[in-house]
Image 1 (cartoon, helix red, strand yellow):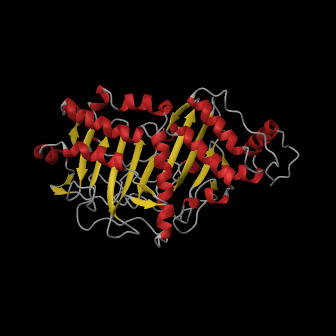
Image 2 (cartoon, one colour):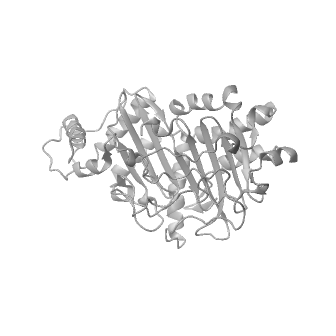
Image 3 (cartoon, one colour):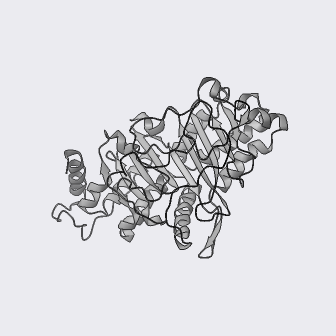
Length: 400
């Protein structure tokens, strides 16, 4: 155990009075962590993180924690279900620990965002009952041009060259059990640390630096779009789909033509989000279009009612997070100054979320949102969705 992890584990053990336990034992009667005094967003999240760690054995805490200086660990996330991830797989936790792990996410998310998170987990459980084997993502549509100025038309969804990621959860098949949780750094109100929670169709990467949170990159996907299980009907990403396609539904034909992404006069068709998984690279992406490659309709040129639709679309992603995270970001992303440098654009053969290759994006000075529609992997007669929320200047809290 390195000195970083030893200090965290020993400090937690002292606080819980469990120094007499064997290394791999969970305390027989762990003292509950009292979060009643936590008032700020950061305090509540840190307290929930400590409460989760209190349910773990020493070896589990060691697997959960990673050194803050490990930039590669910070960027370990993928949209492939079988990729090995940092930390602890939810399926390896007992009932109390799993509930405590999700309670951390519940503090980070808004009520709506947390319900969406649970629905994404339920989607993988549902896929697992439908013969899903946990293969790769849907392929790109036939035909179409490549992205102007480069980019990752395949979404960059595979593992890094030379094999999978080290440690943590992973394995074949679709299941919420294969989603994992990790902490990069020590949960602290004043220090630097990061929460990772993710799996096949979810990547939550929330970085806290001196109590200020950065919730990107945030990947969300879903297959199928809607389903019923246990008497409950689920339809995550419906609000995001309606909001972002609603922008273009309001456009005139001339506006749609101006917003369409083309390459040498030919329509571009993307197979996935273009600034996708970082796959443990340890560096920031360089795939964003710049200069003349930033295309679409400038939001500041739109009338107020259409600008409001753009704000609603950005809100659909950002407001998945607690107001302690989302309020400042939303004000920044939707300011008049930001809209003077924010473009909305679309690609594909049709502007229809039920057509393979349909794609829309919002490209601001900071905010970057993509919504890509692909043929389903398990349900081949349906379309499933991949989306990404990124912040060009504050991904990973600018902590790589």
